[in-house]
Amino acid sequence: MSGHDASATARVVVGVSGSLGSVSALRRATALARLLRAELWPVLAWEPPGGDPAARRSPAADLLVGEWQRLAKQRLAAVLDEIFATAGPGVPMHPVIVRGAPGRALVATADREDDLLVVGAGRRGLQRAFSGRVSRHCLAHAVCPVLAVPPSPLESQLLSVHRRNTWHLRMDTRGL
Image 1 (cartoon, rainbow, N blue to C red):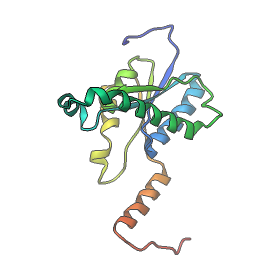
Image 2: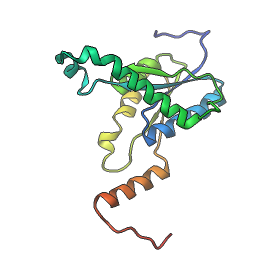
Image 3: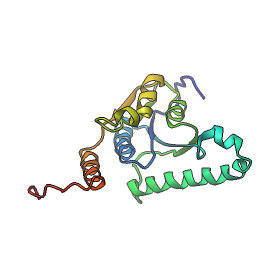
Image 4: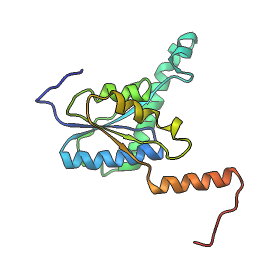
């Protein structure tokens, strides 16, 4: 499935997990697909619990693969329904479920030079070292342009509230 096909329709491939970052990336990818008159390819990557090595060691894993895949498909459908509801994205859409690590799955799907791969950039700050692995993998390995969408200001505010709640810190209500 790799290589350049001049007759192929332009594609905007976007990683979707349901996180706030992936929702921002999906919204940006949809706007770009409309602008470019391209197809939208939302991709949800899934792995068995514990990863493939653990699944290979488990005798029951073969029985559960179908269920895990069904759950991944259900999760992607729920995210798309939440974002687009009945109106749809306004461009042809081809949702894809891929078994594998998210970075590799996205790079494998966006395998044409004229594709555009859109990913969430991950969190800012101290935790970025662990949260940006997918976007870093895509930037390093994709054969097409990659757009890393930064977190929305709302996401930063929600994380701040979550930290305050976790540490039982008082909230500054002077600005309310």
